[in-house]
Length: 196
Image (cartoon, rainbow, N blue to C red):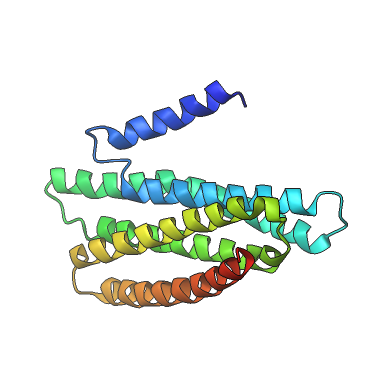
C-alpha cells in the first residue's frame, strides 16, 4: 500500500472519531489499537523468524492472524452495539438487551487482546534487538486497548438492570480484569528485561 493510501485510510478513521456522531468512539479506537498491536506482533515475529524452520511460529502466526481479524471486526461491533443503545433510547424502548451487548463487546475485545499477548509471549525473548521498539509498541497498543475496553465495560455496566445478565457481566468483568492484569504483568516483566 502506498504511503498516501495508508494516510488516507487512517485519516478517514480519525476524521470519524473526531466527528459529531456518537460512533465511532473510544471502544472502536480500542479495537483499532488492539488490531494495530497484533499487526506489529505479526511483523516482528515474521521478520525475526524469517528463513528459520519454526513450526511453532507458523501456528502462532495463524492464531495472531485470526485474532487480528477479530479485533478489526470489534471496531464495527462496538459501533453497532452503541448505535443500538441509542436507537432503542430514541424509540423510547427498554434498552436492556442493547446495554448487555454494549457491555459484553469490550469484554470480548479484552479476551482477544490477552489471547494475542499469550500467543506472542513465547517469541518475545527471541525478538531481534532492532525490533524491540516495535515489539514494545505492539504491547503498548494492545495494553491501551485492554485498559480502554475495561473502562468502557465498567462504564456501561451500571446501565444494565439488576438481572442474571448483570451478574454474569459483573463476573465477566472481574475475570477479564484479573486475566488482563496477570497477562500484562508477565509480558511487561520480560519487556523490561529485554530493554536493559
